[in-house]
Image (cartoon, rainbow, N blue to C red):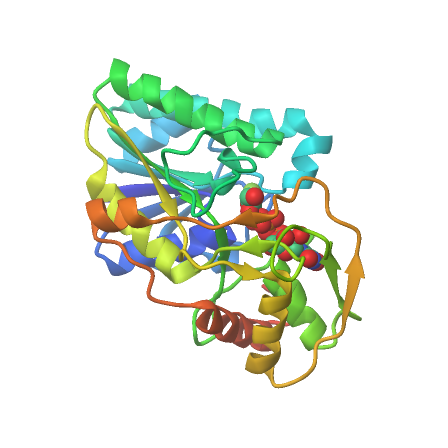
Amino acid sequence: MNICVTGGAGYIGSFIVRQLVDAGHRVVVVDNLCKGHASAVDARAQFVLADCGDRTAMADLFRRQGVQAVVHMAAFSLVGESVTEPGNYYRNNFVASLSLIEAMLSAGVKRLVFSSTAATYGEPADQPITEEFATEPINPYGRAKLMVEQALADFVQAFEIGAVSLRYFNVAGALPDGSLGEDHDPETHLIPLVLAAAAGRRDRISIFGDDYPTPDGTCVRDYIHVLDLADAHVRAIDAAQPGALKVYNLGNGDGFSVRQVIEAAQGVVGRTIPTAVAPRRAGDPPVLVASSAKIARELGWEPRRGLEQILADAWAWHRSHPDGYAD
Ligand code: UFG
């Protein structure tokens, strides 16, 4: 198929592009490089520097390239920033998605895979989280992603398009040879920061709160390898059926606390990582663990890599690219 990946120069997008090309698809990446890295884009894909929220330009590109499916990854993804800059998040993550969907409609593109998030659930009391749980996001990031899902439910009814929304839990890891990985500025995610502390590039890793109602008092998350996550997108393209919006969680189903992640990282890197307990970070739910039973049942997807592999691959990336991508 001819597939357009928006945000294909970003961390997760770059892995999806690679796996789509491996699966035999022809891929055109659209990215405005406000966060992404041109050098992360697979050389076998075509790269177009553009804004995916530009409806006219995107419809034109879809027609010219004969695009048959869109994987929409382009988005801002910092929960804290979404609280202080809500306008940017509603505009970039919701309004731009709406324009993109309308560009698809005008060019006759019928399949969409949408990058959604566990943040759509808010702070559920029970775990593991299934897709039937109430969606009660507690920040603009989660709300904007949920708004796109809600709009998609209306669009698939009104037009003969099919959409799959994938709700990611905590994505981490890299290619095992360290050639493709995570490079955010600023970096806020636990695993890259833990490894930066392990490498001596940061003094210590701050543990944001140790008084949560969890076994060791630190927050529990479900970490999923970016390669497993990308594999689900390849399957989701085929699963998009006209008239339906399908929603799936993507996680490993295992919860690890912040302290457990640090301990596992110490085992992988073979040295002690300095830590310091810091105040809670606003908006962090105590526990988020996915049930991915639905996507296993319906699409035959199962994660194949656990926390140790995630850490080992992220470490390989960190050692070979201590400063991230050259650009
Ligand atoms: N953490 C620390 N110290 C740090 C960084 C993080 O203790 O220096 C903790 C956080 O408080 C949290 C856990 O490590 O408990 C994981 O934090 P991340 O920032 O790595 O990931 P989040 O769980 O906050 O965010 C992820 C995705 C978001 C998504 C969110 C849904 O990265 O895109 O889950 O809640 F919105």
